Image (cartoon, rainbow, N blue to C red):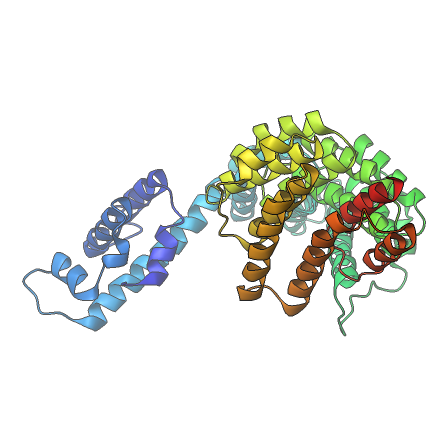
Length: 475
């Protein structure tokens, strides 16, 4: 395949965007090489016909210059130039979608006295754009600083201008807001990283940082208020009142934050719930579920219309854990359409089967999973576990044992799973296979078996196993 580097740029563009890129190339101001447009057309046609993997150097050259001998250096240069124009186009497209950044650049360019009338209009436009901004992010404070700093730079040449000190003060205030919010954002990132990994490096806050935040000037900065509560949750997780305060603050300031910042903080709250659940506080399942509901209600779940499989599965698992079966069924049917196309049907089928299992709709579980073969290891493992448990619940012992035997072979042959994970699943299969035989044993032997399962270091589906053993003990 020819020029994967250039193709990687063009493949990110939709058909509409590629059409705009072609117009971009036709501008003499931006591109004075007609051959580049022709080269783009060759790649564009290959992308539309899905034949780009067949592109070869000699073939491309022949289409460009049918009567000239092949020159590798010239073709490389043309390809490199088109690639650079592609990157500049991406930058221009992103810039055109940020009118505030464009206006701030224009403000700096119009500082000369002869542009006085033009500058006044640009500054009014910047103020309007800032008023229309949805939520106050770090970028918002940086934009406010740039606006006021540009005004300061212009008026600094005439210190006699009235209100110069106020202009300086405004620029300084917004610079501080930007610095403090950005510093806390980085610190939160560090706390999250530190909670899951060991690192020799550290991210320290400057001396007096927290005392400086106490200044009354910052009392009404929503992002600072929320970020301080996030830090308290992550830094002092044992003091659970910080979590309650964070949820209340997110609710009261939800209109003052951007969707990106609000989403990030709600997911941190969800991670806090996961930490508490891992500590054995099962009441946080409900807290986590309510947090997910808030994320959905506030339109924060989807990013550009897309939903990750991990978040989708987490919501289903938590919802089933708190018994919200009807809500979860609606969630699966509504939001599966937003999952990645390549795994959408697998995710929908697996999670629907998981729901049916919780609802004891066992025949429907078998109907969903019996003829599905998953290429993804996670789905393959999960679906086989659900099938095994379903056969047990239906007292279909022979099919269950047959599936256990084939599953054990699958695990042993699998080259992706780690040794520890393989051991965990094989132990689980051994426990399940023994379940149907222990009902006839005496109570003491069953108790020993339960103790063995409970003390197992492999946590896979331990809860279900213990429930089944308890049922057998009662019988």
